[in-house]
Image 1 (cartoon, rainbow, N blue to C red):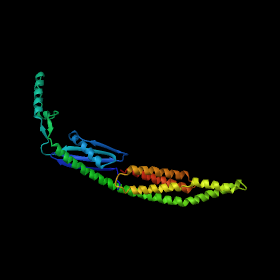
Image 2: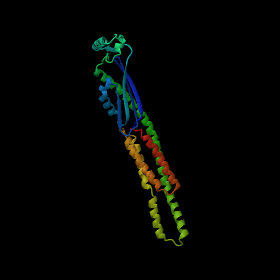
Image 3: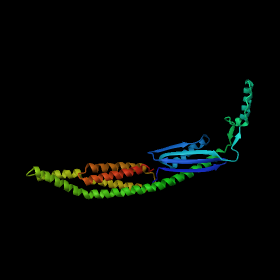
Image 4: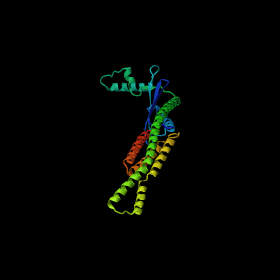
Length: 287
């Protein structure tokens, strides 16, 4: 089972007079990169948030945002009476120094920083609800990752099958290529040498056949494809392993192209590299 690194999930709960929203976003990344955005009031749960996400999401650039808003109805805030008394006392002293008294309303007092106080919900109660909210959001994200991962697995498997077909075509073409090269070489030698040294010629043909032989590259390509298909069935994160296999497969395809002495073999090499690159792009999104 593979998981995509691209996903989004959110959730919302109401605790007392607070509505708390959790949003999770993730995109592909070579490693695990977690960013947590919290308002000051919820900062005390940051370590729990990082721990939970780190346990469930092993790779990707992940952003977690927790926010809250007050619910309509009920007591939205408490008045800091001590702050009001100090503010009024300070105002009276200031007015005594002014030529004319300053007039302001109760609303002006309420707008002064520190006068309004949010009603406090017990932190442990908040922590418990936020953890439940986060776990629910992570579950949604994992479900999305699994669904997208299943689609990626289908696309990768399709390309693996096409690569295996090309490997078969290359194996079938190789003897034909060697015969064509042999015929061309003999024809050229006959044009310039009246009595060629057949023994030396056979030695040269053997060396040429060894240089053009791509059986080893085709064997390794087939082995890598088998390993990719096996990895797709593993439960643990496999993105980095698949990325490494793509590098090795591309290396074999390049070698196949460099040894090619035939247009059809060259085309097979190009087709292989196109398929491998398509797989590599998909694998960049796998955890």
